[in-house]
Image (cartoon, rainbow, N blue to C red; front, side, top):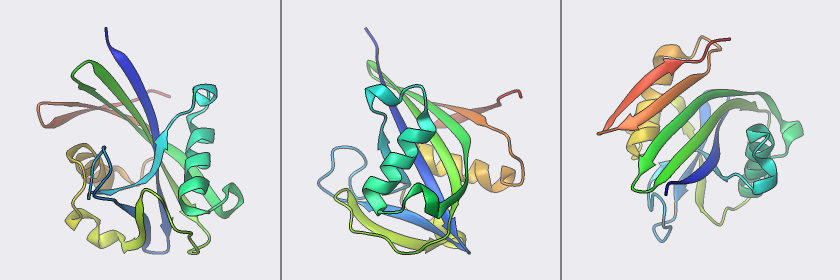
Length: 158
């Protein structure tokens, strides 16, 4: 039987910087790697990944929903890992603050957008970010299916 793990993540941008999380080395998932802000969707949030994402942002950074503009779903990443299907809803938005709190998941840093490609991220996030660089001017939602170290892309129809 396959179980499903649903997560949300956000890339918050302020001027030419993006807020990134350098995950703690003692974390079970992606230890020591760079990641977007986010986490697991709670059972009551399955109908609204955006609400889950906003909750995770506030829990991990202290940034409230009133300090975020243009939060938009851009990617839905799918990956099967053994007997688990991972769904990851990825949002992009603008933060009108740079003030952040400490995070139990690791260390938060504002990173230059131009330096993102050099960060050690999970392969699925790195492939998503590379795709975003070539498609950032559109408002499309993309699905990415991760298999055999590659990502297959499809654009959702409006």
